[in-house]
Image (cartoon, rainbow, N blue to C red; front, side):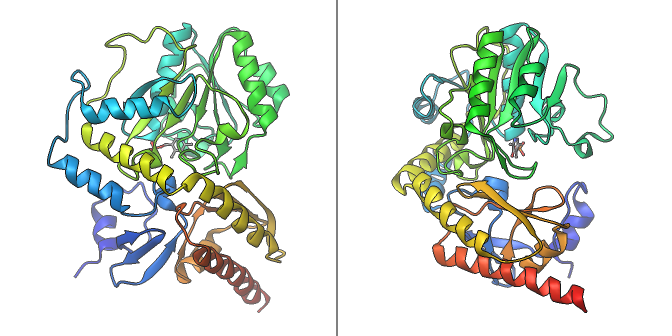
Length: 392
Ligand SMILES: *Cc1c(COP(=O)(O)O)cnc(C)c1O
């Protein structure tokens, strides 16, 4: 009989690096493979499972809403959507409007379109190492050439400046700039938190020059960094905030939060068939309620500090730097991380890379301290084992 791996490798489009281990069940920070072997998940579906897997409140909300109303175009108002809009409006002072969609790249796409519409300007300034998604607009804002290859020409009007560099930002933003788009913590690019001064300068320079300030919180949002949104560590208020991943507890959903400086958005200007569907809205309401009830934002801050401290204690000549914010942590090695990801997987720990040399930890915020200890011990062990193998 063919394995799930063999079937997916044969029939999938081929755009993913598939692992031979298949997962069929999850709870909290644990995933079980088809043979009921438990793994600690430090990937959270790239940040979609901040609440942990199969959260009971999200599952119940989905079941309840699925038998009431699944789909309804936004032309027609709906109880779940209206409640979620009110909830979203309360998350960031001044960002009272929201556009719902289905993914991170769509939330970025909407922000870019709204920026051009609002300012009548075409140019978008993004950062080096930035990742904003894979549709053409978001891809044009994404920096890594690896994601561009074979898809050119991308959209005109996009440029990339060095990140966390106020001087470069000051040079890049002109009277032609529609928007600056930044991740508050660069995720795919290697886990680089923005400094507070940098985000504050971005806001000030955008305001001075009539540009809009967009923050992409797709990976860093919903408690991940120890604040609801990572930019809240810096005291800024962006003009638009891109959300997705953990917004609806793992159910596909994106949202673009919109502030007062964004104008000209009129009926018919943009839209999405599935955007704001009652099913996803019900899941998001349950997810946001669970984040509050379980105090997951504070949990991320506390566990992140604990985890970071433990990681920093690992004595290995292979480690160049441990950095991050809350439970968004990167361990940069002096060499390629691929063999260590494999070694961790062999020890039943799932982690991500971020580029070639960074091991990325994005555990569900409900991960236990005992699980974090096991992750640290496994990494310590993996780094040692590989060293011994190298010595032989
Ligand atoms: C994952 C991600 C995206 C894209 O989200 P998708 O749902 O995969 O389209 C955009 N921006 C950032 C910062 C991300 O991490």
